[in-house]
Amino acid sequence: MLINNNTILPDTDKALRAKCEPVSLPLSDDDRAVLESMINYVRDSHDEEKRKTLGLRAAVGIAAPQVGVLKQMVAISIEGNEKVPPVEYALVNPKIISNSVQLAYLEYGESCLSVVPDREGYVPRYARITVKGYDMLTDKEVTLRLRNYPAIVFQHEIDHLSGILYYDHINKEDPFKELPPDSISIG
Ligand code: CO
Image (cartoon, rainbow, N blue to C red):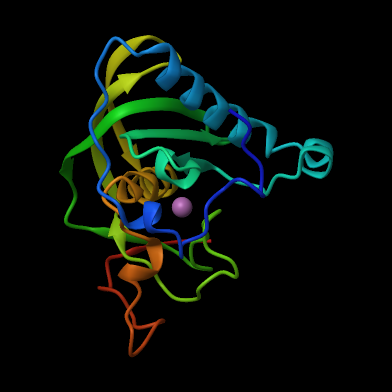
């Protein structure tokens, strides 16, 4: 499946508001092909040259409804640095099974391949979550304990599977309304 900035659906498309179906396992060849194209998009999007030649936008994740497939699949690839290891999963039927009370949010707000231009405001997320699902990259059922930035990315992508967009969480009257004082701000 070809995925680039011309084929990714905008938030005005009803696919972005759909409730996605669980995927049967083992993965069918069709589902595998879609999820492979999704993880490849995100990986390639980290490379400036590839962004130019393939027509991609820098991203850390993508969900199947954004490419018109109403199934519970997300692909996430977050580059590492000296301090944190990379995080990369191609998850089928991901589910958040527990979360912290404490919240976290991105200081400069979130963005989404389907939302152009960006919508400003704080998006409150759980600071820590536990996610269960099947990971295509390792061919394993996984239980992931995530915190801070990766936790935010997973919540954003998993929201897509219920037709929820990041700006749905932004306070309508006051987009930069302060979150509880113990919330973690991520710059
Ligand atoms: Co998104």
